[in-house]
Amino acid sequence: MTYEEALSYIHSIVWRGKRVGLARITELLRRMGNPERKLKFVHIAGTNGKGSTAAMTASVLQAAGYHTGLFISPFIHCFNERMQIDGSPITDEELVELTGQIRPLAEAMEDKPTEFELIAALAFSYFYKNRCDIVVLEVGLGGAMDSTNVIGTPEVAVITALSMDHTRELGNTIQEIAGAKAGIIKEGGDVVYYGQNAEALPVMEEAVKRNHASMTIPNYDALLLETRDLTGQSFTYGRYCNLRIGLLGIYQICNAAVVIETIEALRKRGWKIGDRALREGLMNTRWTGRFECLSEHPRIFVDGSHNPQGVKATAETLRTYFPKGNIVFLTGILADKDAAGMMSELPDLARCFITVKPPSMRGMEAGELAGHLRTMTNKTVRAAGSLEEGCMLALEQAGEDGVICAIGSLYMVGELTKKFHQILSLDIL
Image (tube, rainbow, N blue to C red; front, side, top):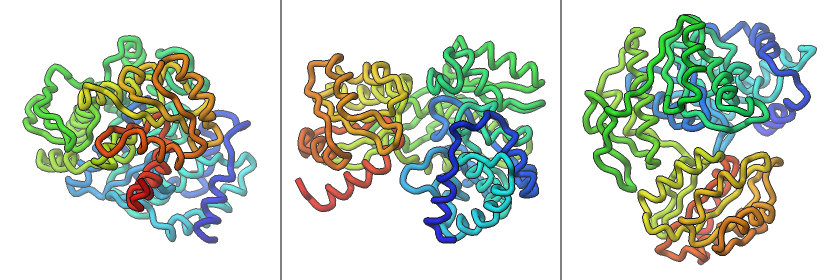
């Protein structure tokens, strides 16, 4: 089996038409010898901020000297990013080897696993084979019925910011969505919850009580911003003074507070994580596609925000750094997203809009998104025929001293990053 054949096999297994539940992943892992039972986890669910929170947590654990696994969803540039150890993605050779071992076990099942179930099983096997001390495990979708939830009680269950997203799968109210996310809370566990959502809080409290767990919510009154610029942010949280992160989104210091409380919970469970490791881990975290700056002339930011709350947070960040606006937005979203809700925060910041179709079967056509935008703003809106054309148009509109923000879908961040780098390196303009 080659690397391309391994990926082709993984991606060939669809989830549509499959019944929801953990039965398939449970059976597959049983056939594999249950590697997940021999690992320890920080399990992370939520609507927004899961990836950034996971990246910061893994970075701190690595700085503390722990052999740390990280499982994320989705990837940005390369499939291998989905499973990493100490910041390095799985190699092509190891992915091929593990896929070859798991494939006959999966194909022997009457009800064969879905793509995500297979990927999760691969990750569990990879982390166990490489003797990870701890794994930071990001939920794929929801919580209760997500394939990652086959694990037992984690060292800490973390639930990040909640908002309306994936309503078809998770429910049409915040309470229903919170209930799905709270499914990762297990008997006797420790929970760190982002909070700041009055509707979701009773759901979390009930799940904590039902499972005899213990919950911590960050004290945001103790979170004080010290400095913020386009190189990073410095802040104080409680007894921790002059902490620094390189992540630029103004919401990231709140995610960092969640990480600090997660580390405190791990310390209480016996994990040896010093203050120096906490500082270094936060400072060294890099996270692709989350208000990431690709270029200074012009300023180009790519951001994977893909729901109204996420786009609102990015818009607030843009207002902080660029109060005069005049931003060229390169936008693309998936067809099942709330286009009006996502785009409503952007017109007052915009110089113009260029729409593209994300490279996904679920991508909304550029012309359709352009139509939505034209009902919301009198700014110029142009639909591009390709991602490359969209990048060229954005660069043309921004000029050398302008600002471009590519936003709307994680599925296009990787390709847009590649296109921008290619165009700028060739000096096409």
